[in-house]
Amino acid sequence: MGDIACIAYDDLVAFTSFNRQKVAKWIADEPIQTVLDKDWKYQIEVIKPALSCEFLVGWTKQPSISKDMINLVKSAISKEFLTETEQQVQTCKKALLSGDKEKIKSALQNVSDLLLSLSSAIYIDKLKDLKAAEEGLDVIAKSSGSGGGDCGIAISFDSNDTKELITRWQNLGIELLDLEKLS
Image (cartoon, rainbow, N blue to C red; front, side, top):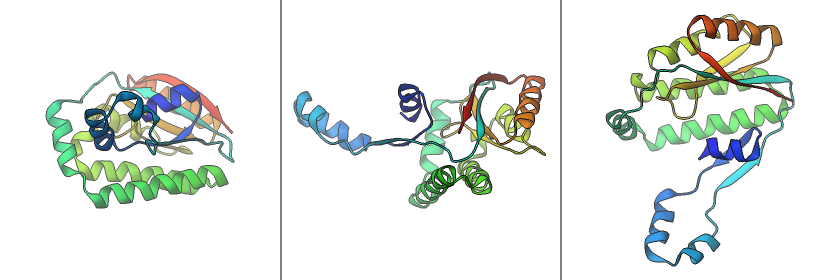
């Protein structure tokens, strides 16, 4: 849903999803117009970073989502994991708005670590390579979304490092899908 929000707004957004179980129950129990008229309690907020940076999306061409993996990861998600992840997302959002580069990097690294703690299967080999390509650069990278897919993201705080990251990705067989200047 967050990917759809970003596409619809064509911008960097903070997205809070609706409660899917609650909405499914409404759909089962109520007329569709009543469901559409309800407050679903989702939020989409456009984020305008207070610092200049570049947002990159890399495609590993190595899909790994399977029903078994989804079930494995879902079973590992705890309330503590969700709370810690939400804390890091809020820290990252505030850091983007205040221009605190180190907090952005730290929060995204923490989210990446939290995903890895759920299951080592989340970071397939190519995603590990995508992430490792940040080494020595003023860049932070992670799997996109909840991981396990075939894409990763990076935020670069230096245009020369952006070029170097793209070169490293290309050498690893990772294709640059998108590059956006954020400021």
